[in-house]
Length: 262
Ligand SMILES: [Zn+2]
Image (cartoon, rainbow, N blue to C red; front, side, top):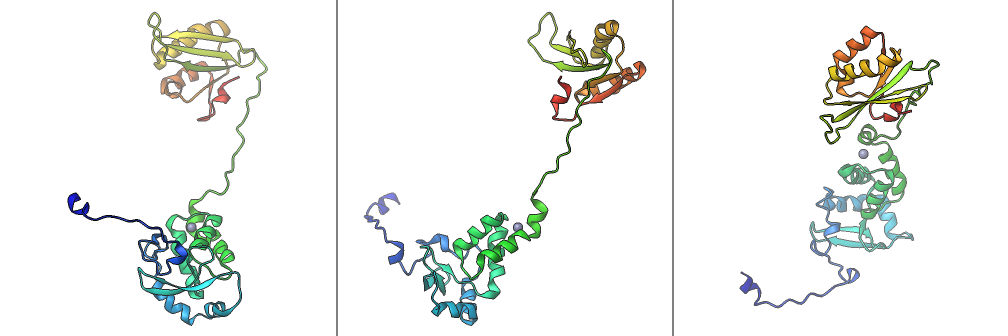
């Protein structure tokens, strides 16, 4: 096949768009009506009957109106050619349909919709029409978040008594040292007294044992304990231990680690 093709010579020449009046679908793929699902032949018939279009045909305006034949459908439409790409003048009854064909592709925003429709079509009041339709598109209103309401996160007050409110957290894993891989860190909220216990595992019994033997044995039982939402701190055993000691547990909001910092 290649040897057959190589018998031909090629000579590629550029034909400027304005000299290429009878553009075919290969040279002007981007004006193809097929992709948008807009029937240009039917629109051409509607143009003949539309008063707006007929007025514009003779009126003086900023547009450069010419009849352009679209080769892929054979339709001849009155188009504005001032932008370099022929934009059909859309008859009144067709405007909403054209907007929907363009907008429903990806439901772009108001500005982008105006730009997209305006790049391919033209009609008097296009900007205003498209703005109104795009901003009232039900699918857009359902799917797009226009505003986030954010409730402020409740800050912690510094408690009055020392060792009354303790923050605990798990740190690690670290490279093993004498069998220990994790640290249980404990910080008093009032005095910021820190303490850390090495752990060889992160099971709830081990953490509870470390907390009781290291912290409670020296500073007494706190009334409040704050942790993140790690599985050890949300387990049933952890809750049972806290309940038997009379400690009320607090958990930081997910993705709000600063609530557990000091
Ligand atoms: Zn939409």
